[in-house]
Length: 385
Image: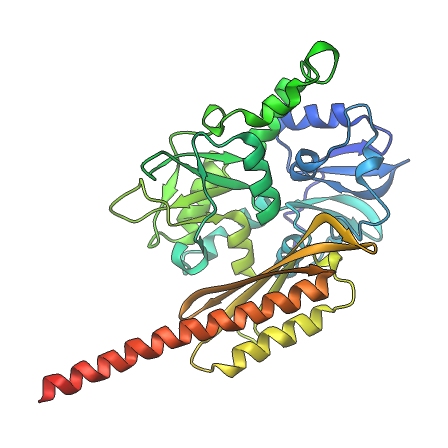
């Protein structure tokens, strides 16, 4: 299936000279997936809600401030006849929910993650939430400030955070859109005059005041088709995953991005590897990353890796012009999920630290499994006495 019939001309376009304040108000008034930026009609890039939220650019600044020359292809350029699977991969690796669609090198329209999911939803009944969800979610407490929520969203490259009460039970969810909506709403009273200092107080507002509640949840045995139907129907980008017998306990999150990632899973000889923020690669290539992960996987043949996700995140700190980068690697295997995280100056250094940590964690999982197998063998022998 290609995207010729599911791409659309329905999109918002702004010029690089547009004020950021007007762009921010666009998200408040319609929650678009993204905005196409043009310069005198020529395509320049895409800005997403997350980029607007994380940007420190003032309202009076121009959109051009977010379309920097250092950004390598802020969104992928997709051909109108591109394959759905490849388009999903491009969206994931560019950390985008919308991408411009070109026909004969001319901007034709856009393709969104929702459009792809709607097109393939009938084929998702073979997958369950357990097959594709992300476990060990990052959480907040009800009295944590919005500033802490923003830091978590940035650091982990995610779009939603479950909120727990003092007993550790799930009571709400905070998303990037909730925070953007709150900041836009309050920004008019805090950027000028005597209340300019209130910006800091905004960051201290407890997430309890802006979180969504009650929470839409799902369970591990639900099909991906059902989960996506719920997300599309309620316009949610993700659902909290809970045990079947207790929807107060959050054990994971499933998002539209997780489902898109599942669309890229292959049964080819080489495992499927997705890289988020691939434009940050400097002295390391995509091919060498895949090779390193395959080498770790090949060492432990009994651990079958179905999918690998590598995410790079740039910090503000630099050393001789090279940014401090965090790399997160997560493997989805027949033994469960295994992850490794590392930091270093430059993408290559951070990846090397992360892959070493990943291998140690794989060894730990393998050791635990071996202990369990040995215990089972011992019990069987004892029963035979």
